[in-house]
Length: 542
Image 1 (cartoon, rainbow, N blue to C red):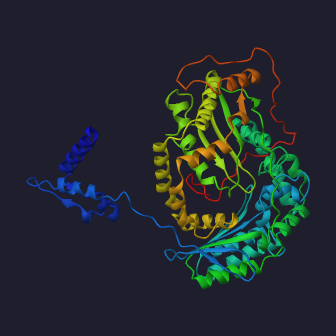
Image 2 (cartoon, helix red, strand yellow; image 1 turned 120 degrees about the horizontal axis):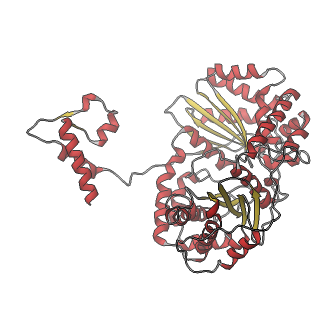
Image 3 (cartoon, rainbow, N blue to C red; image 1 turned 90 degrees about the vertical axis):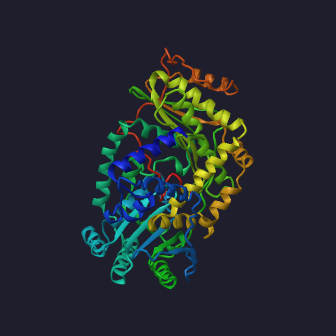
């Protein structure tokens, strides 16, 4: 209350000194238009009644999800459409089931195939060279991009809704998807560029840690290798491999279409029909195999000479369509999803071990991952690992705090409209809805589904899916005694509640076997992992 009164006093003083005052609402609506300034005189102070406008702020303002239409076309390609008449623009996203998880279906060891296809597809076709392709999009005022992810291969086109602009851009997009030539000189250039990425990789302990984490979690599963590929894998890729990938996976029956913008339903349906009819029809990709989870605590050390130690805990998670997904998203927000999370409180606020520690779930076709990571000083490394592991263990064992649960759900609900704050963000949401076969009304139903989640739902999901004793721990540091660290973690799993205290660092006095840093000659990832979803907002449901 005292802070509030001080703020009001400052406002009154500034308003009197300047002789002007406007309400917050007027400032926002008029963008500080001088004509809206209210002039004061020495005998009458107008600030007090204007401050009463603060009482009228609506904290319960409702935001409505866009109306999503599930269009039907003759080629049975799912197409979702949201009409938006605000701007004369159209966003089109084609989402293929053709991410890096499909690389090995073309040939053994071809890691990075889908990513290379995405990077080289607009480098030239049988009719047009790279310059002509770029020029065609520029003349239409269009933005065109292709990106490979772990599950998805995404083609995005943004262009004016004027048919004179839309038609040529659309035609060139289809030309690129159908007739990319993948010339050898482009492939050789892409391969040579990997040497630069390899040098950068050695200088980034966090990237080394992330790559090793995926390999440890997934083993021989297609998710194990970086999306960007490996040096050895990229050297094996030929033009014929890329064309086979295109002809097998970049096909109508292996995609869904998302359309957002200034079109009528009839126009959107016609557009969907044209796109699906002018691509090779092909067939759907086969379901991915299930990875095998770890059954014991696994500690991996990567030696790295740095003043900072880098830590990553994680395990196999679950799929995008798991009924527990929403409860796990809530759990993640509570444990390590923000500044007020348990992980941040224990590692930063109470002890000052790190600037930031965050957890995340990745939900995908095959089971994704749960992980959390941070960096800290070498002399605090062991104690911070102990605290982090114990925080997770207690989060799994203890009853979910109902007050924290309601605050978390309220925060997620407030942030949810960010997922459809623009045509492009809506378009990305539609692509995910189509790819993971969710209903067209999911965005509208999301707040209701969120509201139904109870503390028991979250607790059951956490205990079903999170297993501290089966975690994989990646540590990048100068040295580490893995055996002693494992004993410490397992012995303290059922220990007393966490309390801030200092502990001397545990450093091995004997040489131990660790994982050597990758050399340029070995089959090491060319670049870091970059598996971001189409919509990068941390609050997105997809």
